[in-house]
Image (cartoon, rainbow, N blue to C red; front, side, top):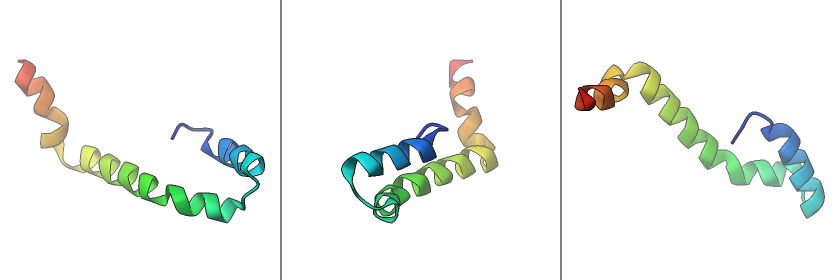
Length: 56
């Protein structure tokens, strides 16, 4: 799930001889989990600041 996901997806699909659409269908749950974690981190400050508060 690093930035060059698109190029790696195309290469992996070519090597596996599958369509891009089939490869994308399998990774959607991971993208949804990443987006949910990003939204929680950005919009719920208590989650982001909990660890620094525990270390204080």
